[in-house]
Amino acid sequence: MQLTRATEADHQEIVALANLAYRGKGSGASWNVEDGIIEGARLTEPQLREDLAAKPDAQLLLYRDTTDGPLLGTVWLEPKEDGVWYLGLFTIHPELQNRQLGRTLLATAEDFVRERGGRVIRMTVLNVRDALIAWYERRGYEKTGETVAFPYGDDRFGRPLRDDLEFVVLEKGTLVACFCLLSSCPSEILLQVPHNHLSDSQRSIGYRSAAFPRRTTACIFANISFRT
Image (cartoon, rainbow, N blue to C red; front, side, top):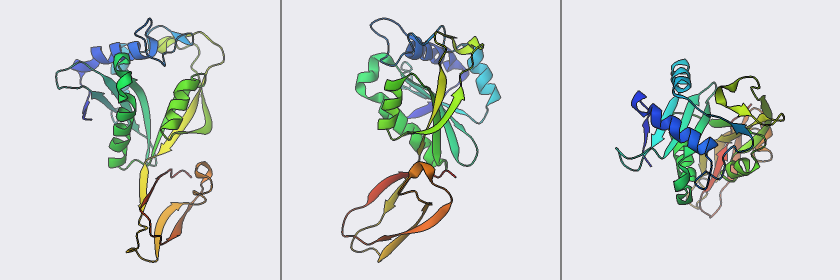
């Protein structure tokens, strides 16, 4: 999947897709719309321009089947501190969700972050969107236990229809480690991993060198989240 960076010429399509994906109605709506949670526009062109101007390091990436084809997906990737990247505005055109483009776009976004040295991807999801949270968890994301207050009184993202909203924080490590465990490898492999990572990845503190004994098996792949 090839992604391209958004330009001003794409803004109208980006806004239209965001509003369709998040707030669409009727038989063609996405399975994860915010119906009954928030109403009104999810995004406007002035808001999009303001966000891009305020966050020049962010990358708003687009997916199209062909260069001049319709917009099918978007993802916002923004580098933060200590190798953490924020992922937002993740959309797929509802008519194409049965093609599993969502998981492909997410994996491509993770590769994008990894190739630029990112170690952790974080996102925020409304606490009442259980199906969406479960979808991200199946993709390897985990709740951190942190929450972010919902901006009641700020209708830029729509009008809330509930008084119990907040955002939960999800994250996933981007480092894919392959431990060489073939019979031709040394007697043990040293890898820098977070302290206690293997026993509790979300409570890892500090770093240590872990020794892995040789095995006559193939490699093991693991997503490692370097959080302190």
